[in-house]
Length: 442
Image 1 (spheres, rainbow, N blue to C red):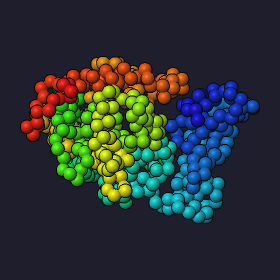
Image 2 (cartoon, rainbow, N blue to C red; image 1 turned 45 degrees about the vertical axis):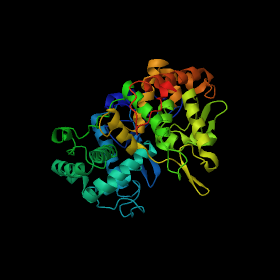
Image 3 (tube, rainbow, N blue to C red; image 1 turned 180 degrees about the horizontal axis):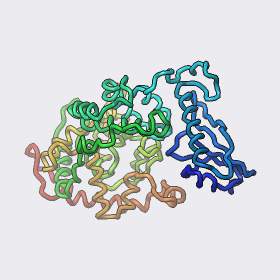
Image 4 (tube, helix red, strand yellow; image 1 turned 60 degrees about the vertical axis):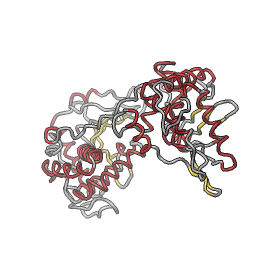
């Protein structure tokens, strides 16, 4: 729906019939619910009321637009639209008589000002909510259920005061600064919907207008830790190889923690992609891995070559499992059932402290950042992007390049593997008194 400014002069200048040859509806965000319909075949223009009732779109003709629009004419139409929208908010069709009953499930008559609970329910029906990703919808729904809802569900939006919001945020932030931020972002989105759809009057004083002055830093995101230095990366990898050489308890067939982390460093895969990696997704003979679309973040599938270091790691793991082989590369097997690997972040935080990384901040995603840095310094960011399974950004990548054609990426993957292996041969610190050589000396 095209937008324009609804001034008497601008409305009179709208071309009719419309140059597209089709009927066109114009709107102005400053006047929610008011529209001008321009015919595609005749010079007719009409004022209309736009809205929805019980999921059905409303477009109700008010009157024809005269060749010259006066300010009085415009004000009269705008007041009529507001009256019609008040009926819609009460659940009554604008053309119904005064004794009509509200539609089932609509906001009850006399419920103005609308409570935050009703605003939230209606906000979830807007396009702004529907355009959010499923994960974002889940986060905002959690912010309502755990923060906004318990404190403000029955509070009318027009009665909400800035001091109430400030006190609530301080209480929420003691539990989680991130969730408190999501709660206020949701509240801001609800207020925006209320203004757009006319759930509050145009002269209503928004309590969030000076939020940044009242709550400095409420919308700040925690600064993410930096990438591992190359020296720290080499130290970490050498320790992983040494831990793989430590004798294991007889009930375990492999020490998956260090193997999983080393493989993540060599491939740059996401945490869930590594944890749930199956032998069926590995082509040992050709040295490639293939993840189906449902296994990747972008839902596009991902095929990548393996460096000789990653291939050697998988070969060692496969040989060590014997008859107790799990379906998952880094998982385990109990009876006939296979289980994926568990989250490694706790182990990684401990190892991060050992190699001198920011205390308690090393995670699987930091290893992915490391892979990107290594790739940028060896083979360029374009090849690194393909190896990491990032979504294509250009039309050429999306429609013309064959994602299964990966042989030209093999030197890039090998270059990253070689650099990591060389780094691991520097400053090797033995663990458990082991005297085995580091990865760079194998």
